[in-house]
Amino acid sequence: MRDELVQAAEELLAERGSAEQVPVAEIVRRVGVTAPVLYQHFADKDALFVAVHARRMDDFRDALRRSGRRTTSPLESLERRGRAYIRYATTKPDTYVALFMTPKSLPDEFFDDPSMRALTAFDDLVGNIRACIDSGEIPAADPEVLARVVWAQVHGLASLLITMPEIARTAAERSALVERLVAAITAGLVAGTPASR
Image (tube, rainbow, N blue to C red; front, side, top):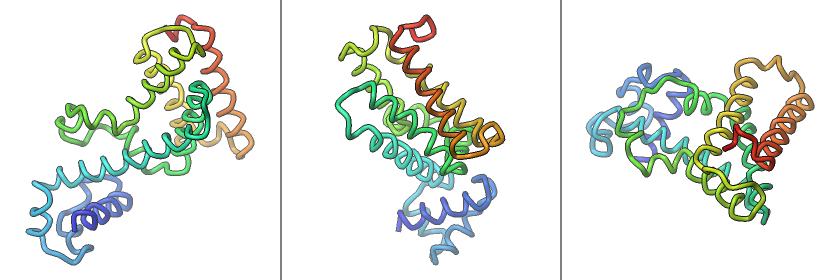
């Protein structure tokens, strides 16, 4: 029942655009239960939408993890992760916008819980960069700082492709832009530029 409630809430969120626009009555009606059933599984509506957010983050993280599985080079894995990040954003723009481009609408506890940080795939990114350093593919630097720099770059292009699609009208233009960004990130990391320290 819990999964059905999360699924219904996620579908309604996609239709309406924000949790505030999704009444509990509509969620339970879609599942065919009453409100007390929802409250047997979730403390309140916020808790339900935290579960929706976590499910979406899981999907996002899993897409990035799958991207780097077939390589032994940490740097190649990082490049694949960057491409996968942008591909996810552009193939699931509504989900991506909800995850990364919407003002915070979740309770503070969501962000304070260390287990939630892993859901964002940030820990995976830090680990990937640490592996690049350990393998000697990039010079030693603070992996958390490098992860923030890399994330900012791929997020920037992903956001532009969603909000200003005219910057790359065709699939070939988008692909060229993504490859240029990945090459620039890689070159900066390998060179150990000041921005990557």
